[in-house]
Length: 623
Image (cartoon, rainbow, N blue to C red; front, top):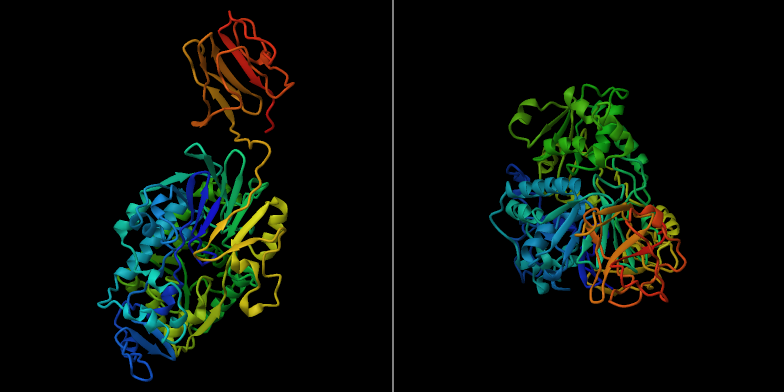
């Protein structure tokens, strides 16, 4: 069993697991932090950005003023933003059989994988993951394509040139892997390869491996995955949460007794409490609006924004903000708000019950009905006519490099009355603000990350007790800026195996002495010419019918829920032997509607030559 590590970002993973002759990609996250090295893409011409001076080496030996611009001591690439792709040279990605997606943030590199590597397999994901992932990709493509750049910068990527550049460009890794954004046709082609799955649904891969998605509790439709053969079990835990938010709670019980547990997607801000951050968000928002200022919230079109709107719904009246307009601006704003209301079966129990009252699961439906929340596809059109200040604007992108957020940063950045509140933890807010300096507006950092922290994950590992834990190397040591905080790392025994980008690990596992049960609610024996189909509870017993003559022996395939579960616990051949398994099991003949005499055979007893139909029984199977 080998693990190929294609991404260096612990919360945007992309790994490939080779297991039982199958090649399985675990997520395909796209590292967008590379965009922080680029200048913003303004929706309207920005005199400030267009007047930035070009950057040249101090000795004048090289001129890159057409590609690089300097702003407040920082150097930026003046080109269309590019993204850092997962490794594509570590192994042949055309050999990948399936891709398992854990949540919509971890599928943003999917078009690069499916459309450029020769991939011909199948992608598995839940319906909310696919639909919301489509929205995120659509917003990304739309935000970049509507502000075309006439030039493309590439000279600075030369290794000999890059080493002469100032930080952070000098320290940027894998710049040769940076690529421009995909197109919508490529997005549609990638999504067409996805097969929808539900929680606890068992998917057979080539008869060798079975994969099962479990609720991870992090986002709508987010999943952890169980990958198992008859004797080995691998758990893949990515982007999970134990907090009570809008998704279904995390399924922890199914992770128990894993041979290997691959752990990714922990919180990026382990020292911040999500509840405390929400409180700071609301108080800073209210203070700014009361003073006559506007609030800008850079965000994704799905996820945390649902929880923020729900908190504001409960807060605005008591804070005296009932007359303040809230604007949600995104090309996919309407679709996002609608999807959140129709995926009821993927929500937590409290929100599911509202559907049957009937009430909308999320209160933002009422905010829209009362005109307290308005949504628009862009700043053009109807928004220009309805725009009133002071107000609160939710828009993307959190990197501040493209999208409608760039316009509001340019519009409101010169006034100290206004505030920008960062709630997404994916980007350094100081790096995001760098090309807008000098900046007069206030900046507040309230990152809200509901994923597992180190205390929670250490407790989880003690409960599920995997034999081995595998995780990014960032989780096995304290943060560089807090080297004394040994509590900010994974604590487990034996110590976790760590990996970094472009590494290949050989995973240890101890073969289990007994075969793992692949349980299903019912067990069916297909109909045959002489016998009608029989259906029995799986927990009761297994049954195999063997047609025995002097020259013929047939074994039937056991089936449950449309999937095949071949039973090969014994070999069938013409002759004098049938054995009862397990030894000493009580026969359940009285439960079977057999015609004629029922006989139980042992190793020492021969089959009656006059009897052509001989039943074999496997007694009670633990559930």
